[in-house]
Image (cartoon, rainbow, N blue to C red; front, side):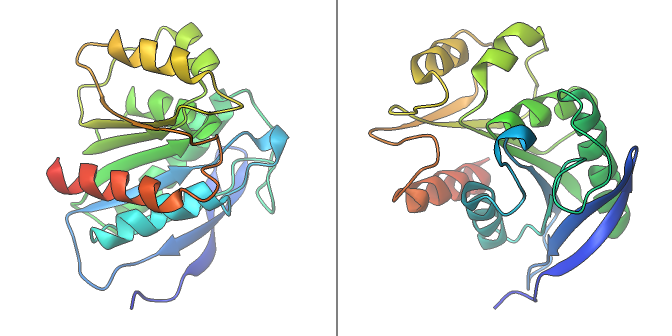
Length: 208
């Protein structure tokens, strides 16, 4: 049984960020931050995809920090088109580095949060990058470099929010190519299919 979740605030560029830290029983060599979906469309750190990714990481011995972007929940500030949100994620990653000194960073994100995760890995070394149903319209226009880290992309082929065919085409055109897991019949929020998402994350961490 893992220790109880710890609710706290982490100081960010725009003010305090609401966060939940979950430790693991066994000390590993990494820690993870997880970025939630779009703040203007109901995305929070309590999203079930975000919490599923956290549970998967805990299975592999990686403690996690889930947090609300600026302007979400009790976090200070207002939505900033991904730019400020990347600064938020960077602040959380720095906090985690102080909490778990010497450990490598795992960066994960879902939908809009995947976009923020990719932005963050442009400026921070990471052990793994995990992007779930990435907001391809933001990725495709970003011109960001392909990160040279182990990278997992999980995409449902029945996604009603993100164009799954565009995600698959985009991933197949990258070099180095990320590890792509396409789940048949799965929508954007992985209704009824969270176990498969968890398994994909666990497998990628353990094999990578």
